Length: 171
Image (tube, rainbow, N blue to C red):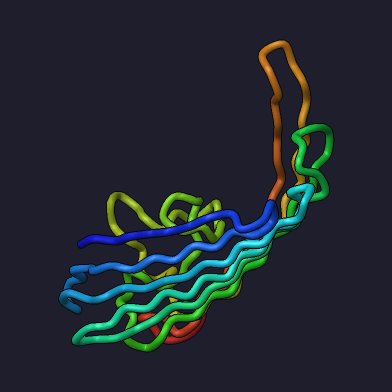
């Protein structure tokens, strides 16, 4: 497998990324890949939005499209900070399940579902994956300054609905 990615901030608030290459994806075989991401953020870094499209072409062809937005009451870690996140994603019918969407603790997927890791004991929990995804998250952070630096605590609620799953029904 080989990939080339070119990306650049075209303005202080706009970032473009293009990728292409070859992937050896079992059982799909060798596939040509192409992708594009557009990211926009506010000047004060309180709002951030991203949309990505990725495609694979070979003996089997498939694609994904996803978008995410984050809003913060402050970009600084001081006092109370409120954070809201929303995400949507969809994949074509022939996308292999390991590329499907799902919520995770932030390690294998960007969509947060912090109490439910997507990988457990080295195994992918496919019951949490779907070709369609809608997610939302709310968080309240409290930051203090101490002798050793900033210290914070957070309360959060994450919700993810994965549809078009391996097992019937949405979860």
